[in-house]
Amino acid sequence: MYNFTFYVPTRIHFGEGQISHLSELKESGSKVLMVYGGGSIKRNGIYDKAMEILKEAGLSVTELSGVEPNPRIETVRKGAEICKTEGIDMVLAIGGGSTIDCAKVVSAGAKYDGDPWDLVLDGSKIKSALPIYSVLTLSATGSEMDEFAVITDMSKNEKWGTAAECLKPKMSVLDPTYTYSVSKKQTAAGTADMMSHTFENYFSFEEGADVPKRFGEGLLMTMMKYGPIALNDPTNYDARANLMWAASHAINGLTRVGNAPGWCVHPMEHELSAFYDITHGEGLAILTPVWMEHILSDKTAPIIATYGKNVLGLTGDNDMTVAKEAIEATKKFFFETMGMPANLRAVGITEKTNFDKMAEKASKGCEGCFVPLSKDDVKEIFEAAF
Image 1 (cartoon, rainbow, N blue to C red):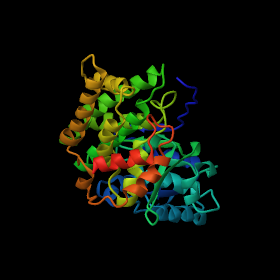
Image 2: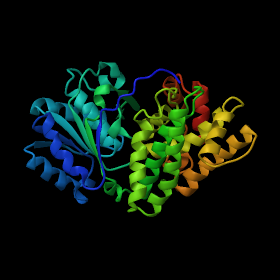
Image 3: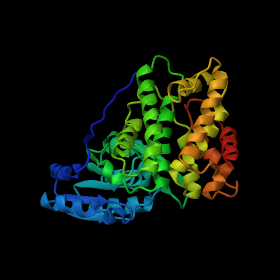
Image 4: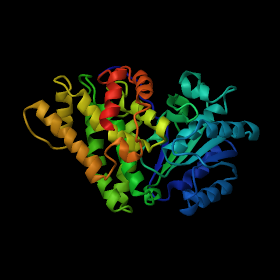
């Protein structure tokens, strides 16, 4: 297990009714930029409750609405400018990972003299940020408890991740009841997203990293148990609570530090989203089993087989056989149990015109991953997923 520094400063208020803790935002000043997406938080009452608590705490609120499912740099620029002109003290995101990601780069852009896109392309330029708070309404990305943000520039067909310690939220409210109204599509996609985060950290050749690997297996078992329950019984509190907490731990470093190599499925999916604006979790579900098949070898089979045995309950002495069974079981979970689209055509991608360009860009983001992928490797994966 390699050396690491583990630091998660986010204060979590977990459970029903914990939105009352928004009064704590006054610790960071008096002016709040509230960032959210569409009208769902107004329809389900979260918006009104948040505004009531913030105003009772003596806080003034400016709004940035309309954050996209794949948050756009134009929205980030607008938010950063509001922060500067209005003298905003802190940023509050109410929504899922896209909203929180947008809020993070807005908060950094408010402290930066140049174009916020610079901060997306080069996270080392993020030197400071306004305090970030969040109220989570979708279990998926784990952005409520990590340092990462992903922003898209559709005019350039580019989607990049950035990161900085100061982008870790100061406080996040996790109320599982706020995810009751999440659609079946987004519940499935969110489960696939958090599973992919865990897979990206789990599959490695690092020796002696039992703690992060066993944490990862426990999270995967939890996700695969409760994902179908939430899909079929949307108001099951235990299912929504376990998925919400599992998503946070999948990416806050618990399963990553001391073990994880560079990620590879996410860079490939980011190209799909950048060119076709598809749902992130659906893209990950489509690519993950194809990637597993592509990298399967005598060297990787024992690790994939361990996943099959410890998470899926498979048995057998031949690692290659068990590994293949694990991949098939993963496909079945995504495409049958969770009802997700099984190939790129099913999400509206009807041609391969951009695959060469996408593969070139994605391969650059796969450096240092579990199994190195060349441009040709990535293109083969895209074509096999088609």
